[in-house]
Amino acid sequence: MRVSVFPDPITLASAAAWEAASRIRAAIATLGRARIVVATGTSQIAFLDCLIREPDIDWSNVDVFHLDEYVGLADDHPASFRKYLRERLIQPAGIVRFHPIDGQADPDRACEELGRALSARPIDVAFVGIGENGHLAFNDPPADFDTERPYILVRLDDACRRQQVGEGWFKTTDEVPDRAITMSIRQILRARAIVAVVPESRKAAAVRACLEGEVSPMSPASSLQTHADTIVFLDADSAARLRRETLDRYR
Image (cartoon, rainbow, N blue to C red; front, side, top):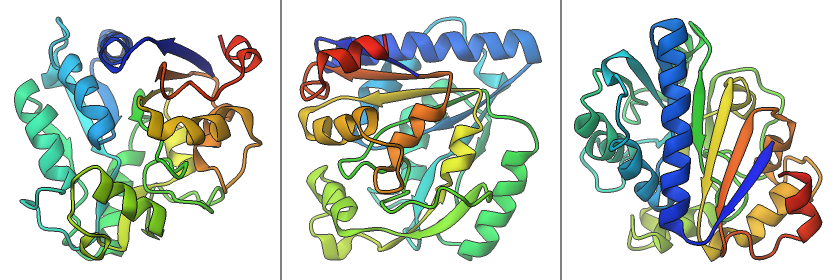
């Protein structure tokens, strides 16, 4: 794992998008197509905006897989991650192979069907964030580090639900669904490369736990320490609690 720190969120987003685009182009050049996983949330908006502006990406040869989605949330709800991805990536880039999580379908069936499609070929690069509670995708602590299933049904903890309210997706925590479908930790770590985009001071404590703590289900994003080809992109605020020796170790 490597860590790069940038002075502000926009510089971070631009650098992460350049890295992501390079990975996509390389996969298309080598394999004929790229398979990617894409995170959502307010922390990813600037990154995706920069990514769709990167030149020379043949988006017609890119398969996009959905990282997580609320159970029971309508496709047109403002907080729907399907809606988020269609508006911020799928439609602007002209992507034709999008594999969304249907949050309104039977959850077990949705996990099974999408899991089969995902497992057909390796993922070339996964774009992820880190939650305020240290979650990776919707794997809240204590996360299941053992399941081999590509997608799993989870119950969201209170801290995760409060984050969704804080980001403006819902008015109250009572409105936030308490269940979600998420890509599992082991499946995320199967990606050939991982680009983690983590701006803002509200993520600083989780970043410190991820990079300086032990690999533990209580800090799900700490699992990124075990992946050889992960780059964590931070800004000055999200990196503020890290020790200098930590940054030197992951340089």
